[in-house]
Length: 263
Image (tube, rainbow, N blue to C red):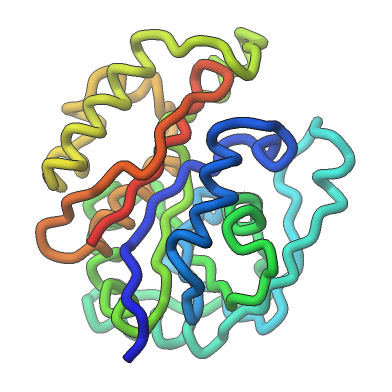
């Protein structure tokens, strides 16, 4: 019988997490060992946006360096994990069976929402990876439903992940020229703690309605692509949806790096 993994939400933060000596880097570097080695990884990444769900189906995906202004070593990094076309097709069918039209797509490489955390979690790059796109126009409830539809993959030894950021306001980050260890203002910590309470209580309803109920919701997420992998992971956790916070820290004062496991 395949090992069943929890569904997981990680905050991938800035690509600099690979170079900086931070609590988040230390967490990600040890979390793969803690979880164990899955048969494959299906990851909903904030940096793959489409109108309807798409799943990467290349056997050997290329790299995408979807950022600028960072040190050259980041642009030289590779994450040569294989893809899994069979898993992409299987996941597409699970979504379709749940009434969510989806399709595999070729020619889409690994974006940094995928390769940055996985390079730390599974540095050997020997676990096949399929990326799932997010649909910012369809909202959090849709993403929770996608997670629920793909929850059966967990019984097949697949690690189902969401990769985003617990808070993600790049305008505030750039405007303040914040130091890596800058203290988090109240509008960041209050949002994070509200989320923590709702996630650990299993209140998927509140998480789905985050933009109406959470304090400072749109200040922390002016756009929602980095939030949506969270309800996805929570939905994949199965009935009850209660989460356990497996990491909390903050970088640059405005990027909360929290991570949760479900199920």
